[in-house]
Amino acid sequence: MAEQVSAGPASHEALTEEEHAAMDRASAGISRNHRHETPLLSVQLTYGVPRTDVYGECDPEELHLQVEFTLTQRRNVLFGPSGSGKTTLLRLLAGLLQPASGSIVLGGLTLTGTAAGVALPPGRRSIGYVTQEPALFPHLSVEANIAFGLHGLPRSVRRARVSGLLETFALESLACRMPLRLSGGERQRVALARALAPEPALLLLDEPFTGLDVPLRERTTLALERYLEARDTLVLAVSHDVAEVYASGAEVLLLEAGRIAAQGPAHQVLAPHRERLLRQLGAAALADPRLSGSGGG
Amino acid sequence: MLGHGVGLALGAWLPLWQVDTQALWLTLRLAAITTMILLLIAVPLAGWLTLERRPGANSPGGRRLRSLVETVAMLPLVLPPTVLGFYLLVLLGPHTGVGRVLTGLIGHPLAFSFGGLVVGSVLYSLPFALQPLTAGFAQVRPELLEASALLGAGRLRTLYAVVLPLARRSLLAAAVLSFTHTIGEFGVVLMLGGDIPGRTRTLSIALLDQVQDANYTAANQTALLLLAGSALVLMVVYWGNPRGVVNQWQNRWTPRKTTSPDREARLG
Image (cartoon, helix red, strand yellow):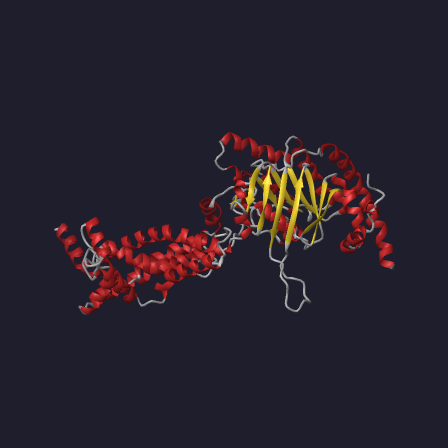
């Protein structure tokens, strides 16, 4: 008890500081998040086999994913407790995993269609994917990493894209640096720039900023949003940070145990699940006033 | 007078060089050609064996095909060289279908020819090229292969732009092992090539001849040359890679300068 009391004010302060920037982004985000008539992405797939074990006591080992959803807005957040299948879903979308059955249609283009035997390779899906741990090519400079996906484009285009992205993510001074000599935040920005370089139609973010401290995360998110403003890139970002989800003003997909439990604006989707989310997320979320349900607007 | 003296001196010294120069040249040529062909074969083969990430590649069928190919490629490691030489001799001789087709193509059967030696050497040294490459390729983090695929690189580009630069130590190890192993080859060469001076007599065969002729001076020189050559190659390689090559098949990318401990701590 005593520990909780002493920890309370500190975490509260941190949150209110974060809130300021978050709220600004929220208001900007909502106005930007137009709803489109035609689905930008429609997904309907199953992955893995539900395993019934003979003793009926243990949970099945493997995740069984069965999802069906369409995205009609540009900014989307995939929210869910760990182990709910968020990363698996992203990997299925990216083509790194193949579903047991189902289809993925991105802007009219079928990426995966098990009925017709369609399975576009990851590189031809126009998808940018930034993982939690940035997998930069260690033998290539920052510049060469960003340019990797621009193979085959004219030199002038490659130059323009790379220098534009270096500027967007404040990496100009690091252009010739090798990835091993970068800090964690710098690495994530390079990974982001590299994924954006081929100008993907869909950007998948698997909590790439989790390891960064709050100011750095804010700055990177801001740089990303500014970059995306001029483009109609569809974004699906994984998060289990409640404050971030509220702040983003994005459409929320709630994924639980391999199923889409709810979809809609944050206050609609997350409020009814408050009790369960609090239990799953632990004490950190208790201090967040927005999860009380009254804060939703 | 002076010219006569020089001639005498040379005449006195030259017999000391009793190594079969023709065999030496042929051996080096055989090793160089074999190494080049082996790298061309082993790099894509190692890539196929270790890097295949396509859906279905890990199906039981795919795995079985891969282990079958790997078994065949690794067989020369445990097979007596004479066994391999014998089968190649039969296969590449003038009386089989393969032999007749080859005779039609190049005018003579491959057995007892330099071309036959190349074929035999490639097969015999294949495990020595393949082993370091598969070990090195398997060390490349799968996330990097995925990143490459996501950024639109096909299998070939992933191989030469990501995997080979990261496994360059393995590539060097494969080349060195192929080269030195071919130089030291004996059984296959004798079986398949016979002992034809200028065509199939390599240095290791010349050594046998010299011993059989009881010419121990020549044999000693030949043996010493082979020993020194092998040691030299390995030494150069180890100087270039202080961490070693043969035992450092688990090559991971290392920065030119190591990061200081406090920096690593900050990066966590």
